[in-house]
Image 1 (cartoon, rainbow, N blue to C red):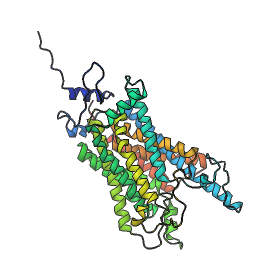
Image 2 (cartoon, one colour; image 1 turned 135 degrees about the vertical axis):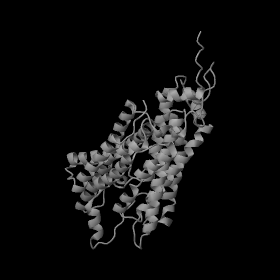
Image 3 (spheres, rainbow, N blue to C red; image 1 turned 120 degrees about the vertical axis):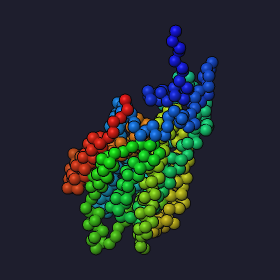
Image 4 (cartoon, helix red, strand yellow; image 1 turned 135 degrees about the horizontal axis):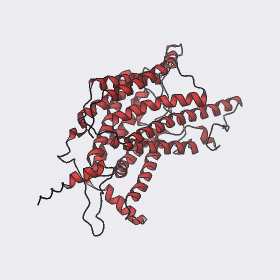
Amino acid sequence: MPAASPRPPPERAAQHLLSAGGAAAVGPPEKGGSSTLSLSNHHPSIPPAAAANPTALTATGLMSLAALVIQNALVVLMVKYNRMSHLHRGAQAVALGSGANVSSPLSLGHGSPSSSAVAHTSTIVLMQEAVKFAICLVLLAWERPSVTSIGDLLSTLSAVLFQRETIKMLVPAALFTFQNFLIFVSLAHLDVMPFQVVSQTKIISTALLSVWLLGRRLTSGQWASLVVLTLGVLGAQYDPSWIATTASGSGKTLPKVAGVGGDIAAEGGPNVVLGVVSCIVSGLSSSFAAVYFERVVKTTAPSLAIRNLQLGLFGIPFTFVSLLALDVWDVAAAYTVSSHRGAAAPFQFWQGWTLFTWALVLVHALGGLLVAVVVKYADNILKGFATAIAVLLSGYMAHVLWQYQPTGFFVLGCGFVLISVVAYQYCEPPRRR
């Protein structure tokens, strides 16, 4: 009689469950059952280099990438639409010789005076994190059939959040907050074009960190395709008016960061070195946080809903502190050329909020959840390709909706992006089945 095959260790069973799209439960044991599994570190049978030869993309991975492309393009179009709305209302107010708010057919908000002001970026980011947390709370209740009341949900949430696994989310939450602060500093010292050029280095840094932290192997052809992708994104986003404005007699103009640390512009000499260093460190922080999160979700048992709840446990307080530092206390002014808050009105949380702003928050929150799905079922490098394709899609949709005329640089950038996508897949080593 043949001997029965040995049962796999529970860690391997949990990993198999994850690869099938499930998630091991984390939290208190069900009635009459044994305690549930929680993996604090990946098992020795799952080495860090497991991602060196990743499995073929599943339907979930492909669908999540396609959804991320659409979501990113939608965000770009919504932001552009919102800018057009504010410009249209401002032009009507000037034409009437009055500073009063004038309703616009482009505006989806109410007609109160506050709607003419731009909403603070920090409040949008904070509410985005809160909405994402609420969505994940609903998903947690859906994952646990035993949750039948608010009390059960709160008990499960407490068990999910207050455990050792949660501390792993402290690193990405802190890095994402630090990244946002550095973006505001770099924008205060760099023109738009240099900022775009330096910020695109995160495409390469993400690949480098994927090789280091995940043991992923990339061929020379794939590295070349990432360089082409970077050039393509730069070309698609390049606007000759940036150079023309700087070269004109109007002098150097810096972008204004409305609602975050005041409207920051240059009166003295901008510190270009500080701007470049801030932009590079911001990209590295973003890349490290993204790759770190990918490693955690691919090598541990908790589901994506649980991981996002744990991330929100740190992310929401960090974002609130960032709001206080950048908008209420104006800490960023110490690292920028100047701050033009002066005798401005006190900070108002709901300044400039409209129905359109809430829609933008919802789309952003869904995008954050999509990113988690993408890094689990695909990877951060493919996420970079999806983001680049979204730039092309948003440019095409802007042409259809608003007769935006694409420049030669945009067309050239589109070609580079498409070539890089094909080259990356063509040069890819064989995947595991």
